[in-house]
Image (cartoon, rainbow, N blue to C red; front, side, top):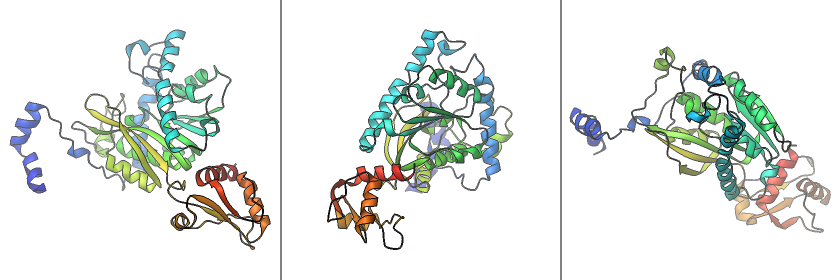
Length: 365
């Protein structure tokens, strides 16, 4: 039956009578792109070609704000009031991320989290995060956009920020760790193989339990991609481009990156494209399992773990300290910043989420 449907879908009669006359888009070509065997040199060429527009035309004073939001009144040098209105459009994104993050991370307030804004542009979202988080890393391919971000973030003394310019694709591997990563209307301007590479590295930035909020187009009417055709095209990289990455590719990257998709919401998209806001969580947060930390006589300075599924059965949503001697237990309590219970290493009153988050943040400082 499946083969029969495919045969009918590919028939001249169907294409002429259904697709052309009714305008029904065929999206089967958007199911999966096999980019796994592409040499990194090819990825780098794709990156450089796409980055050309953002580092040249989009970086001009005439288009630097318009390149972020393509509305005519954002072209040219903006007045103070128009710039304020432009930056204010990022408030809704900030509010949505904050609300969604609170659903999955209860124990670590935003004020204690490190945030990474990928494709920060001129700082439209970063201006709202800067005063609310511990530190924000603003990352972009364009040095001109980063300089504009610096100006916009410097207007406020509250909060700490750092600017990072990605000159070469390989520098994505040097990004700092973060509790929260986000990227909106950015990844779509890169080719599918590069989008996969960028997502992999962004998810790699997450600390255990960290969240990534990525807006991604999943399908486009009659969209297809061939890296050889793209690299040989004289028009490629000369304008603002729109690309996609199928959901199957995104699931693949998430699994490879030890992350789980915890939420995926439709946010519409531009004409002919379908986009979603996808929330990823680093799996090794232990939010699905349970954790035992302890010492033995030989290695009192190291932390021991047992399988989270085994701990789940044994300790029922509580942390235990397994130790040979009270000194080791008291030391671990000190690391966790929790009170050591005299005569018993069972910390039955300490929730697993609060302690694991605090444990990680303290030992990695």
